[in-house]
Image (cartoon, rainbow, N blue to C red; front, side, top):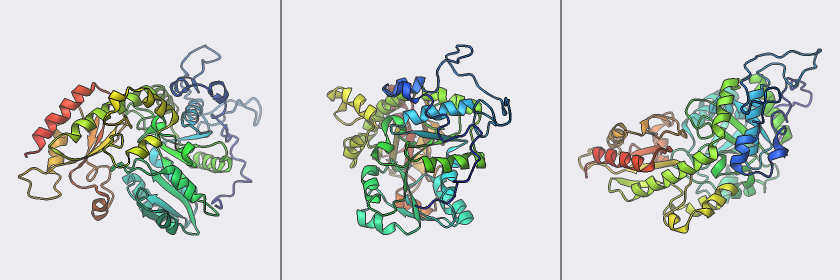
Length: 450
């Protein structure tokens, strides 16, 4: 694929923003260590000046030079900052197969930067059940401002011929979420990557790994070229930072150079303090994701047996039609952990992240087939699950996709995707699971009359 920008002559990366900046500095020392060990140590080595075991926050916007162009790797904080570099280093280490990471001020800024890198009049293929904000940027902002055309395809069910038929001469990228938001469709990333590489000029394969985090899924090992995260969610994990990131394998140096140039030129970068908070959050990612998964599996089982529920969507359940793919595509470290769980605890499924989508039954007195009345009553009756957008924090959240996160998608398209009035999305936190189960059960009883 021909690049949208010719950066061969660009000399704007000297501001501490070389393509290896903040990535390889700490890698070798911890390469053989396990996931949570790397999460705690990569990018967080004791401060050489004071011995502080936690990196200090570097709030300076500019840095003294010993002579013109002679500095310690930093000139201006938009281009590079010690805290952002440390975070990027940790991210590149945690996303298995990663070699480079770039942090941005939000997940939406991350999306915008990737799509802007494609240049004018490009074509992309996107999974049809995509996050509402991504859909909005593709179909409104990028379409109107740079002539981007997007073909939405059900990449879960589409056959090889249908996928290849969607590829055009100017197709530069394939955008995947797996699981998708909010219906948790699963895409066979390895199969899709292999299929795209049968093309003479394969488009970039991007996977949004926000829902599973680097703990449960390693898309680069499955063939992805770029992994995207809304760090706001599981990686930070405490609902106090808005941030996004891209992680790429080592061999994509030219693509990294292009994206890092745009990161610096556009300037949608996270602050030093936000970078510090996100790095603090990711230190416990492995511990948190295990608890999110355990809790979600138990709640999914309870919901599956509830008379108030029409359908439970959680790929970790053995009853899920794509359960085998979910297990097969686990990251090596998640697979190792799940293998250690006693078989008696895996009778009905395995932990697979903390996201559950639920279709509620209609009350016997409901007059409108696609009414959201039951969903709203359920959501407002919850005691521990907060009615709020976003996901991935230690606290449990619940929301109504049709009216909240996916409200920007036209109603007819929402219906085709299965985002109806009775669909509720749960972000299961790490509270005591029995309390969460009791909360969900009492809210169902209040919301639905059978």
